[in-house]
Amino acid sequence: MSELSFAELGLDPAVLEAVAAVGYEKPSPIQAQTIPALLAGKHLLGVAQTGTGKTAAFALPLLSRIDASLMEPQILVLAPTRELAIQVAEAFTTYASKFRNFHVLPIYGGQDFFPQIKGLRRGAQVIVGTPGRMLDHLRKGTLKLDSLKALVLDEADEMLRMGFIDDVEAILAKTPDNCQRALFSATMPPQIKKVAQTYLRDATEVKIESETRTVERISQFVLPVYAERKLDALTRILEVEPLDAAIVFVRTKAETTLLAEKLSARGHAVAPLNGDLNQRQREQTVDDLRRGKKDIIVATDVAARGLDVPRITHVINYDVPYDTEAYIHRVGRTGRAGREGKAILLVTPRERSWLRTLERATNSPMESYQLPSPVELKKMREEQFETQLLGFAEDGKLAKAMALLDEIAERNEMDTAMVAGALACWLEASQPGSLPLDQPEALPEISATAPPRRDRDRKGGGGGRPGGKPGYKPGFKKGPKGRGGPAPKGKPPGKGGKPAGKRPSRQD
Ligand code: AMP
Image (tube, rainbow, N blue to C red):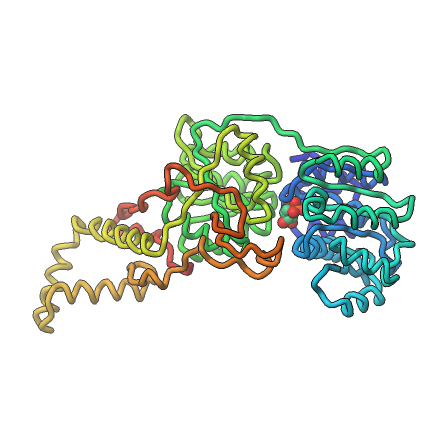
């Protein structure tokens, strides 16, 4: 993470205001390098993957340089897929939210021409689109580039792989000579290098280097999951993992609070840790974790820097980190004081290229994390319930309770099993989720869920389940050790004869 703040980078005040509203704490490494160069009007060649914050790295400075009151296309972004085009357009809309009368228009193949032409006629300062459709509009004359100030090629190697490179070059050739250009690519195959040499002038090169470092004593797992199912996946991980304490990493301050609230509603002792808390509040939160008043902390990278709490058994990367450096720092929050630790990384299909990079950087392979199937989950819940129940078998009040229930049973001609069953149902009614009564079919199988529509549309629709069925190419092999999620937690009851109590109510 960079030491400079967004304000120190010299962005337009309206853009800064929008960044503050999204809750980004600090520029990511690629942003710290890219923003000054683009603000200075330089051409840029960036070797960066999705997840590094590259969209903001070009969107923030380019938005800071245009004339927001001029309703003409001034920034053009080419993206390989409709999905990415929409995401980039959404990001621009967010970062430009404090400009008045500002329009961002996504343009991609497969959509009717008419609404696109209407949008272009109405006027938009930023156009984000796939190369083929963009070229169609240029040829028809419905898109004009006379006022263009900047052009960005996003995921250039993907555009090459998908056979769009000729269209990309045709568009490049139609952009004004004095237009600022930036090219981002995860890899640099020769054809992309050639495009860079031809169309970029005196470009600043930005590359996020990372040293290889071994992550000892920490077993690393990866769970492919569609973005929309992340919360369900996390809920289940927290249920099945034998964790003492965990730190869950997210990207924004707002997300720390939001996710902590959701986990709290699910019965976890959890607190957010972010840069909005003052020093004293932060220390208090860490202290609560150290002493066991809290079991989970949802943190941003900045807030968790240097955190050293030996009881952290698990690091869960709910959002992928910006770079391998940040990843290594995150997982280093566990496995402290010579103990073993476990790190679990949630990756969405778009972020899968991260895996190879991370494996290289940490010099160790990631194992595939397997969530339990509904049948296994039900069994675990039953075992957990049994453990908790047995925890009361030696309770000081047991004899009195038995005598009372005997009386009730006798008066009502019930047998003991019936009384016990009624009690258990009472417990379930007052603490939903206490009793494993759900049928396995009623429990969602998270990893096998069909991908949500937007993900399915990307890259020719590989509608497979995340985890290795045809159509989806995550490169996630089943780990040799099989299941990442071990036996149920089965916490003994807490002091004073209360049930372990922490058992989350099941809303997953
Ligand atoms: P990208 O690499 O552009 O796909 O960005 C990945 C994610 O990082 C997006 O969800 C952004 O909203 C988020 N992001 C980008 N920059 C920052 C930042 N400085 N702080 C926190 N989150 C960020």
